[in-house]
Image (cartoon, rainbow, N blue to C red; front, side):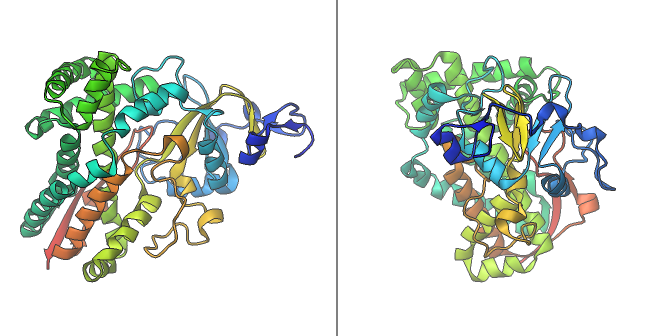
Length: 434
């Protein structure tokens, strides 16, 4: 341990130390801001919210940050944000939950596990986990394959189309609605509601601009889900929402409002990220078209394809945290109370962890330890479901489609303006059926 630093045994084991003397170290407040740096030609300065789309494909930004500014200070009207981009530093932050706090806001705006720490987080996680057991996931496997099979057959017969609306969103909506216990006939309306809810959530908890009327529209969703919870409780449903209803009514560990908000969280987390993950797979097929033939000949390789896709183009790019105490990251002292965003997607392409070809998709790579579904106590509970959906979809695509073609300049729209996720928003492709 260097002079001037102290840490408990547990902290030192994780590589996290509190700072008692900062004389020899640069403090976060002394760092230049992102907009004050000389970025390489073609890279706009990194911002907290990507309102222009310059960060829609952020991997060149990440590579430059890892090399030159592994802790990047970014100005925002509310408060400065520090972006951490190297694998080793991100891993330390994800493992040190008592120091890197999930609760960024003074008051938690919604009953979302990703906004909470400690016992409050574990209480919600335990309720949701009851509906995401291996047995529960296994019960929807046939539903996933049936829905995906029909969607892919139609898509191949038409010669392609827009993958988000024709393939990915219908599959994820049908799957998560089944897991939750929400009638599938109501999914179209639910999609409109959750878009407003997601915008409201991002506005009040993630420094995003939101949408006009997002809070008012979300209230309709709350009313609808209150009725759903009452019905599933009366039916003794084993769906996730049934477990949530009993946690509210029988166990009294949740209030009615918390139960509703937890349902919203499960739905949004269950369809948005998986939809984007599957959309990102077509970008890989465009770059490596031979993979379609390989997955057709060796369908068992779809597991490796999906896992490398999660590392290479996982949809969740950032994990927001607030520091409980002063810490050192990459030789810099960040102040207690600072907002930090751990760049999971950057860590997943760090050359120091994955080798010089970290920025390439390699289906045969040993990618154990990636952060595609988080890490530590906040590891995504729904990851087995997301993997099931992606594996099923890409296995069917490879079996029934011989080629995928699109013009990135005209057919591809990437997500922008989001504070957490990235990836395909819309993509129109032409396919040739086998």
